[in-house]
Image 1: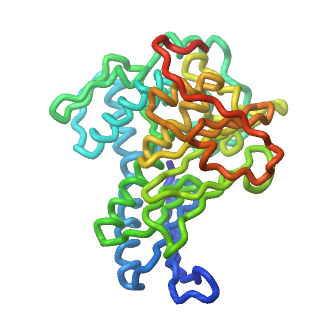
Image 2: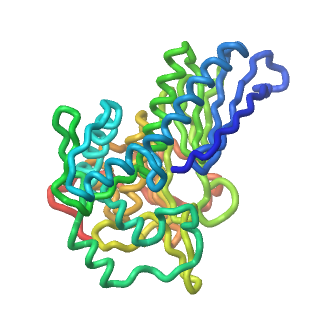
Length: 351
């Protein structure tokens, strides 16, 4: 995540032409993407104060979560690499503990300890989009032999250590959701009850805007525009992972940044996954894990306690969980989605 500068504009837009109620919006550009905060039914002063708190948190977050610029995470990774202990704050411990639980429940398909794999593929710098040859099979196998996971990390009385020097933390598949959860809590602490925070298309809503529920659009992974829409319930998040946002090409072959930690290569069975959940961090991690799981997503969804799932396969087929089928409104009614039950399995999934 990169937060070189935060710019903020606050504007007023009418909810509907004949309404006296208005939505107040703040637009940021941070973490390499656009952030939008919409507040309903608050005064200008209350909106300004609440947004200032969120802005302050975003400024502070970069000092913690940036993966390749000096930050708390880079300090932790340096300590792990050198087999040293490091003291961490309670907030950082909370995030790592949550990441460990989510990684375990995903059978490590969501693996924040796999930073060296992202580095191997060149996704550790600002020029990640430039064309380059993929890493050699020898380097991939060398990484797989190290097999870093969140289970390699221990925290005792605020002191972090690791028994695997190959662990390199990176929270790209969790941090957006975690930040949204904290930002929503900040808004609620200021009495904001109706709001939406959107970071690059992933969002969490609370309340509604007047008599109307918030509506989220789900991006089409292969065309311009929206694939589907979802009417959002109070205190609900929607997150998507896809192969269309962050990738580089080499000899006309795309290499997206969503890696299968079992193979060391980009996951290849899916184009996008969308999930709904009341916890944004859990939704964020689950979208990544289910993308990597491919055709085995129902089992991983069960383990991660995710009931609302929409998957778009490489061949264009749309798969929906039973609960998601009740919620999604497909823009093109000819898409003919397939309903798949979320099931629990007792043995590890196969590659």
